Image (cartoon, rainbow, N blue to C red; front, side, top):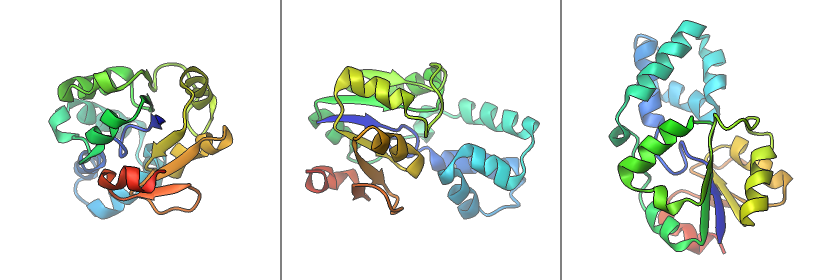
Length: 186
């Protein structure tokens, strides 16, 4: 099986760290659960929802980048899935250097044939250009993400889709844990 993976919230459990940074940025005045919920839609959505200005966005990004990869660990069992699939690629909005820092920390770069990062010049999701590019090169079967934003472009190009820890309508498969990956994805 050849799989396209989203990064944040799909391979790595980064949203708790993002939530903590935004919580501190907003002087602990908004509940962490509310921040998490809006961030899971998208960062730009959360910025607009909470009315953050350019300086606050800049500070958020600086603080988030300063976090150790240890605070952005992988989800349980995902490494076992990566070991058993044929090809794995990543499509993320995260800058390449940040992706590589986390992959290097966990020694996971070996699992990925290619990475399209946020600074590679492709339009942002849900535009399908990066998915088309990766599919043409790697003959993908499945796209896995944690948000609808991750599966819309996959659907557009005819890939099967899986939402991780998200029950929103529109995916072909749904997973709460990667322990169930091969039982759910057939």
